[in-house]
Image: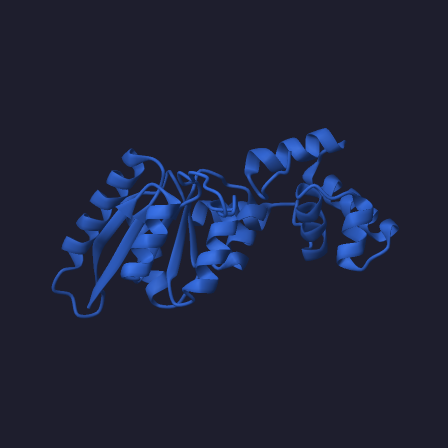
Length: 224
């Protein structure tokens, strides 16, 4: 069985490095009846090219960089990389195994990526063994998170609840407490309480620090 993999990342160096690893893994598994052979089926650095590639021939696995080149054109959404792209691809191609390749190690971001539809989350520091384990796991229908990152999730004290995450997400879209309370059908007091608890868990003292942290981790698309 040949497992076809598309690599999408804005950095050519990362794409070529990952491709070399996949080719090495594919060779090492060649002839094995129990483990599929892995083969690169294309690579791209832009969202437009990725969407065209997937429409022409959907692969088994998409190794997706967190950021892609997203040339803006009239009529196109600006949410064309990061979690928004993961969510959109998962909805359009539910059988596609998405492995998110990201420089960010935020436990909250990892949780959100898996919730958005990613089957695995690995960092830029991954080695060939980690990549191989991720590929095998997703083809078995399992969720894979790089062990070093999973340790951070288990040790994280800043575990946000689903409601807290939703409040922060809506605030980052440019809404105020009144807007968020209306969208979530909650009182302003309740929304404010969720925000305060989230800030305490994230160890930030004011809105400036909060938005700065969320922008650095790229947890949400920050509205300016």
